[in-house]
Length: 266
Length: 284
Ligand SMILES: Nc1ncnc2c1ncn2[C@@H]1O[C@H](COP(=O)(O)OP(=O)(O)O)[C@@H](O)[C@H]1O
Ligand SMILES: [Mg+2]
Image 1 (cartoon, each protein chain N blue to C red):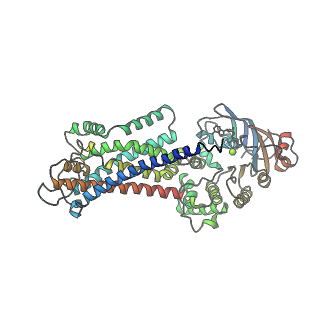
Image 2: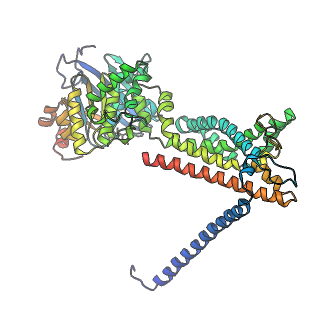
Image 3: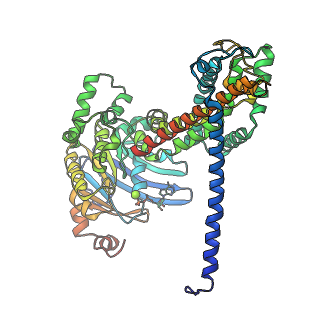
């Protein structure tokens, strides 16, 4: 863990511990310049919300943090993303090992076509855990943390696909928690869910804050207000403003942020 | 204009004629199928009895006798063909669906398409040239090879489609758990695609089960219980051919019986393929 010596970006209190430091990030899809010179400090054990109108590059930005763009042939990334001071794009970083520390939860729940138990145990097994008792313990622990245990404990061998949408998403979160990541990236994790399931996910995120650094993309400002400590506002591929969620929502410095917050566009 | 009634009757007439014409053709097609199936069933039913499916062929004039060795031979030859075609077909489909971009992938797709249009007799000739001639010995294995080549384009196409049908999000989910990409593909994507791949396999088997042309100069046929794939082997489709062109009524009846068995086998495979598909559809 490296302490942030200088807060390069406006709105960072000196001395806050920076977990992820993004500098001059540019992402292109072919000729489409989707992220332009974005810099952001993401603080340890905080929930950082990324907000902004649809198509402004929020997904592109979070996916750059754990190198998910490696899978998209047309995507090109420049700039740096440091986790604890190490650039994930540097040659000596193995993206596969890195992604265990920087996990991701997607917009649409994507449980694997296997049993509920195996969905959570799978990542453990692939990462070398062989002890059945330990695996069972970690699976239960992860499902408890994802507040899903009570709902599935009697049907662990059912397919993950048989769960409701909200349960599937919590299963995907449990799957990620089992690997004990340090950073959890969530791309609109509740947008495909009904209001009750959304509340559960939001409560879960509030819980996660204690042990993890969470980045959540959301198009719902109300949600950003409820779950996040800090907020970054994106527009047309650039970060317009970063600050504590309270400051962004009550005293935005930039006119465009204010327009967005007050619903005057987007 | 919307209410121009002068045009309406003629349009209605056109519509009615269209329904009549397409309906007539559909009825004709369905009727033909039913007549063929019914005719084979009537002709073949009399020949089918326990002896027919369990015994060896008898010489002309000796009553009874069966095609038991041909049934077993068909199963052996098709099974070996599947063992060859499945891994190659699925892995090629996987390559095309997951990694295949650009010229090499297009070329493979094009070749598979061409291959699926090559007449089976040409493929049989090819199998004969490379699997029979060098050894101067007909063999069941050479027939399996020909069948595998016939199944391959089907396996490639259905596997590619099945694997493409698995949402990218599932692959991304595996990747985001710190899995190497091939790990996610092997453990997550392939299992998700399996029901559709099985469906494709059943259809491919149904497709080759009745093939006769490539067998003429590969499996060749046999009068015995032959289980060794290195030797010539009896095959149901070949027996039908031999019996049908013979001058004996007794054998003609047996040919119909064999044809009925083949049709039943293909029917069962097709229903099985539908069932595999149906289960898959319900689950997701
Ligand atoms: N895989 C892709 N290929 C090409 N362009 C993309 C791709 N993903 C996103 N884009 C483009 O990048 C821009 C930002 O998209 P995205 O990051 O998804 O925005 P957001 O998540 O804020 O809605 C959009 O113009 C979008 O069309
Ligand atoms: Mg998005």
